[in-house]
Amino acid sequence: MDLNCDLGESFGAWTMGDDEAMFSLVTSVNVACGFHAGDPMTMLRSCRLAGEHGVTVGAHVAYRDLAGFGRRRMDVAPDELTADVLYQLAALDGIARATGTAVRYVKPHGALYNTIAVDESQARAVVAGVRLADPALPILGLPASVIEAVCAEERHPFVREAFVDRAYTPGGALVSRREEGAVLHDVEEIAERAVVMARDGHVTAVDGTVTEVRPRSLCVHGDTPGAVAMADAVRKALTGAGIELGAFA
Image 1 (spheres, rainbow, N blue to C red):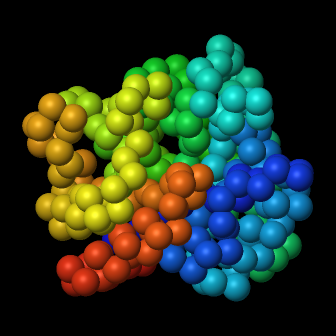
Image 2 (image 1 turned 60 degrees about the vertical axis):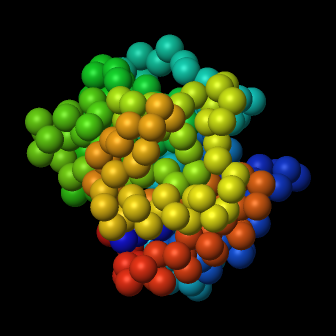
Image 3 (image 1 turned 90 degrees about the vertical axis):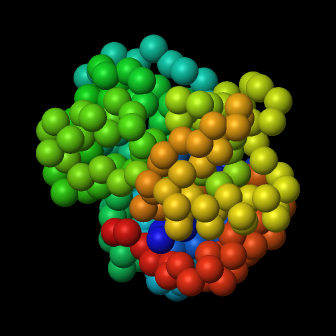
């Protein structure tokens, strides 16, 4: 099972999360590409840390929304979104290759992630941008989503992920961050959920129903309070349950 985390989200004098500690706990890192967070120096530092820790680098592409941290739905024309995705990918991959590594997959961020789960036009635009960069580059996303269907239709590699620290709707979507309880904080509960997701392939939704997710990767958020303790607990719980950790790309 892969354990991924959104990192490299500091910007200028603003620091987000404890990247150095998180790099030692996960197997893949989704590095911000400058549109929702991150900057050239942070991207360079993140790629160097990934190389030092033997962690796989993914491009965390987003809508152009620094002020909203990429969590605001934006009305972006498909051809513009395709170019934006390509631009972000190319920037991070160039920096990664300069450090001796490379971008191995793509994970859309925030509002873009949620939008392509339900919006076919935006999903196709993202796939088009990724394919322009590298047709073999996997896209990490929500199970049973529109982006998964588009990838299947276009024979583009898609990898399912589940979020250990986010609440789910009965339909398998993430509960909006605007709603109370959308983000989980109980470390013990989160670690137990991670094992169930990895071992049994399902998650319990907010109404108590069970939703199938069958993830190949589990996400722990680096900007959540107590993120390091949470990631450490998840890693220990998974390995303690006999689940081997390793990057999918």
